[in-house]
Image 1 (spheres, rainbow, N blue to C red):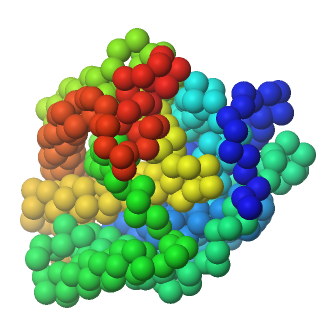
Image 2: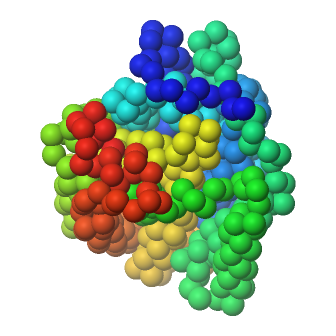
Length: 526
């Protein structure tokens, strides 16, 4: 028999204190994402990675999280979600120290991969514990809104704290932010968090774990290389191989008594729509954040601290809309709340697509704030419907699927849109004729490279090179903004069209589509 109680009950003081503990890893992971993007120019200067190595430094973390989330979510269902959370916290702290003192790009990529594997244990455990601790639908909606808010707070704190550290210390110091947070979690969690596990879940199918990794990683790598270099034979073959392995993985899940991934969850239309929308929206957000942070530093010439401050309006906008979304969803159809938010995001992306390299700081800050403001309803309500659609004993798996969609989207955004922006940059940048061939190659690779080359050139030549490089980089951001606007509008239409009425089919869980038009306490779902 499962150790999870089946009778809904209202959470008490211990559960709300436990929520505060669960906010710690959420806060850390969001700080880690925002700090790393801000540190990109400093890592470039300190370790001198190539453009390809820099992309891997950024996105290997998300790739490993995406690859291991499903396995870790299911593992938490079996061995205990609190136990897995504590194991992951300890591993994350150790990997953070190793990343801080990485001596070359290869070592940083390896430690970032270790951080990703450890991070994969944290997010599904926190969401699953929230789902188990807050069984009342209304309280669960509030708890998930708080969880999302802490993610937003981390995004707000990351640039400010990280910017200050980058101005005072070396680039590796930003990774040490996770050490005290993980230490506090290890001390507080055993006292405040109850343990949950499903004793009937069966053994973990290691073959399925291997297949999930063998599917996700080649697909992501293939997409990254195709986006960067076009339809070359090898990346396409790797991509196709990943898709074929993915088909084998899905087929295997349908034959197992205790599958790694319960395919039955995907019969819920709200569940699937929320997943697709989260994936596409996070894809756009990942690429947009990468280019906006570099624009503020390398095009506008802001210090890391000032760039962090300029990112605060977007973070605060995300906090406000995340908190207010459940309230709005209790008064009007939740799907419309999400769709309206996505339209707001589209307006922000349009502003980014029209920015120029000389007078665009205010426009970039405003556009980015609109992008984040519009994403708040999706993150808060979409996460709630995904987690709330699953039975309690599968909360870990559902949480892992939700986080896989989010993390894979962010990683794909950095890889695909980062490569698109880089391709635009390379096609438009012009180096002055009196720059050496080697220096011209470095300057034509990335904007950070152009900035380094310009330091060694005469003033007039440096100005010409930087002007062309900044214009080319801004053109790349313009293209990403246009893609983001199209994605936001398309997903807004998808949400409004698909999630609009209860489905009385027998295979739909009552917490899914049917929850959209029932009692007010259930209408916090997407």
